[in-house]
Image 1: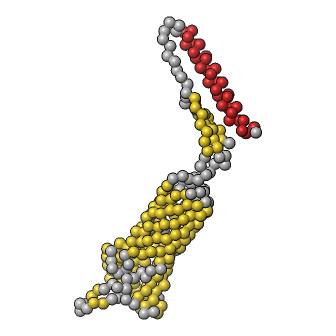
Image 2: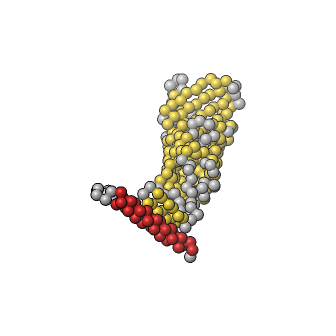
Image 3: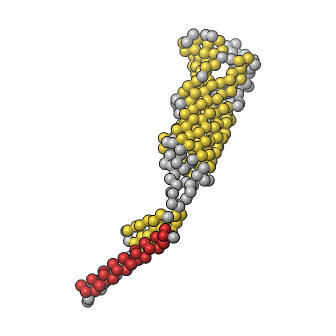
Length: 278
């Protein structure tokens, strides 16, 4: 009961102080200049009652990316397992997400991400191939957990990647003998769907696993040999990618602080302002 009466008592006290101050000011002006025009100064007083939101409202943006990325591949040629090596890369894996929270524990997000994904294979003991693509991806996912303070939450969803640059390096007995890159190459599919899941913790770091169920190579890719004959180098080649990455956010992670006291009363008089939470 005392807590409920506190805002009313403060309001009455402020009103009384304002009236007394105004009376003193008027009497001083009247005694000092009885025959002159007195300019009246009005003190505007306002009181506002409100309630703090339980979660961040509206759409907000976070910036970051996938960071260090360790990828693995399940590769087969003519149905038989092909030897491959885990691939690690740092650059360039960046992006931005657009987030919408429906409560302090549930939200959705989308965005755009730039990723460097690929694989390293050894078709023969003396031959090693490094093949990668840069992609622009659009994820759609949901978040569950502590979205307000960011202490820990889980996320999952799907993503569609547009492969826009392909690069290949060939090594024989450890020496690089050939390399090339192509824009919007036919060697890989143009669109690469994937599924992902992971978790994030304060102050913005997390782990994510992403899986590409589609073949990394385009089996219909056609080229020509030295004699000018058509060949299909990827026809019997199949590879599925999965990678683990350390995600991060380097801005946009000013977490929403949920107030313990849900309501407030703001009183304003001129430049003075006073707030009470209850």
